[in-house]
Length: 451
Ligand SMILES: Cc1ncc(COP(=O)(O)O)c(C=O)c1O
Image (cartoon, rainbow, N blue to C red; front, top):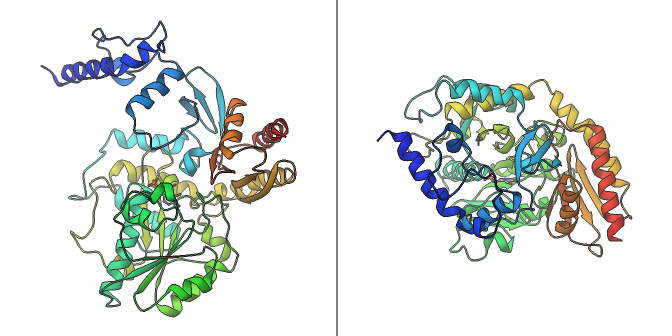
């Protein structure tokens, strides 16, 4: 039997089984191409196996078959174009989250999409057992953008963080002769979901129940250089921070925080590691958020927008005296640095090279910030904004961040709540000033209704 027929057989069996609940709940439209009968064998049944469900039907499928590790808003997105997405019923929404900044350049931006299409037709994965004609070029241009000389390619943000931690520990062992290296981190951090990363999280949901935890981390209050210094001893090899805490609610530290950490790390010969996975690559009006205070870390951790929302691409970027500690066999990833990811990443680096996206984020961020600050005292208690990134604290007496996010969704705007009463805004950088004004007008009306 040809392999496509086997695939179709498996697919029809699998989708037939999966649909039982949705069907019995009456969630399928009458025009559904899915049934528990044999599926017609066409290209489109292979590519779009679930065509014909309503939003409620897709949500029911996820509820039944996807682990409940998220609590999404009840919107089912079918397509995206620039700053807008469209749900399966054809309703349009202004996407003011941009997949936590991964879609910085908007949905379907032609440059990374074309880069991906071109590379799809060439080679997608060769593994690092061999070289490709994409990785070296991507690495050269990414490191030039960052002013560093080497990069370590990975896929997800958490992998970049894990890799940065491994590099720092190895550097501690090899260069400083430390047997039991420790790393200082900041309270309120969010660096991802692996065991080692949640080991130094103070978010109970992220951490509780996942022990035993990885030792070797000390957490001190964010924004407090003296606390970091007090936590350091001869075992400390690195300080790991987000230049701005995104999940924490877009928390912008005092201007002397990162320079103070830079100075401390220089004095004690420790590595400063900046997790720019959410803050980096244009979002704040600079290529890297640390630039705003004139700081260059030893290691940048990058992810999200590096793949433009097209493919997962992450990286640790630093100089040879640090990244050079890794020898063959000591770290790796089958997919890390694959040619498809490298081609897309390269297109992103080139988009950022002339600074126009960064300028756009600054200019539009001013519009967003000014409008949002006008809501303080009218249902908003405070606003933190830098570039096209804002954390808006809603007066808890009016409702939760989730309630406000849901009300905005019903008006055609997608934002995400965090930390209970905060809503986070990170629209794609292609958003317009008029759209931002509309966003704030809608928020104002929602808050008015809640008052
Ligand atoms: C600052 C920061 N670091 C790391 C991560 C983890 O990235 P990923 O979800 O791609 O593993 C995130 C994700 O939100 C993040 O915001």
